[in-house]
Image (tube, rainbow over all chains, first blue to last red; front, side, top):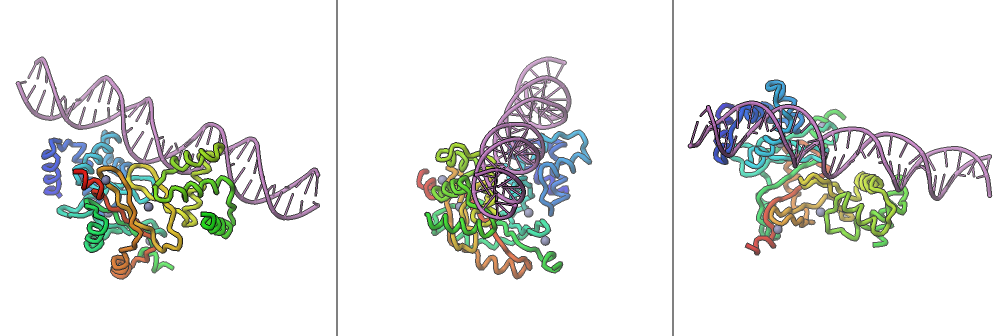
Length: 147
Length: 147
DNA sequence: GATTCACATAATAATAAGTATCAAAAAGAA
DNA sequence: TTCTTTTTGATACTTATTATTATGTGAATC
Ligand SMILES: [Zn+2]
Ligand SMILES: [Zn+2]
Ligand SMILES: [Zn+2]
Ligand SMILES: [Zn+2]
């Protein structure tokens, strides 16, 4: 955990930003809730438990900054809120999501799976892919058992 | 065009909704701008050219209704606005998008391309896929030529 | 034809996510 | 120290979307 914070700190300073206490507190919340998909409001409430004086705008600014540095990815699942997802270190591509339409759970797929599709798209549509967003909507394994 | 409206009318009445003049005007705008990715506001402004008395809330309600009936798909490209995309008639799956990070153009991929990936996901993650969203972000063919 | 009644609409108020503003504080540089 | 730049917190604001409500409409019943 500390080493990941150190590396994020280096990414920030490489772009001449500082890892202020507020930014560090925000990053810690993201690291401690890595499997969740937190909204800015979620992050704000969690950060405030440890750093009660932080402002909401600062959290938004920090998340925006981390997004620009590709430390986090910003995603929309269609519920009207942006969510922030730590990018796996060294991951070339953003991971995929399984959104359950029954219970709302969001699971992750870390495997790429899209290599072949992307090769076709690059070639046939002459499109230079920089990033992707892939989300499946359906019934998760838990809800299938419940029926 | 008229036949497509007729079929949408049947879909509506099948769910005991009526194709009111306002709804028909909205559907016509969607049909006439099928390759665009219009926001609710865009649709509203276009509908109002022909039907000046329509209200914005009615457009929102109609788009919501059409979305529930799977006549349109609602998508977010991350710019803070929902966009509404007519589903191809008879298409089992929603088509994919290429969003250019240079010029903002949005192109479509009607081919499915995901059969293999979905088979893997269904099996390995035991997830029953009902729908998907796939968007690639990158440089479109036009912007590659421009450099 | 007049009367219900359920649905649909327009206008507008309300909500909520996100952004802009700005003065104060913190952090460096000199 | 003093000067300068960056960052922050509070808050005002913007904007997309939803809720409310009174009005309208058209089929069904009397
Ligand atoms: Zn589920
Ligand atoms: Zn994720
Ligand atoms: Zn382009
Ligand atoms: Zn499309």
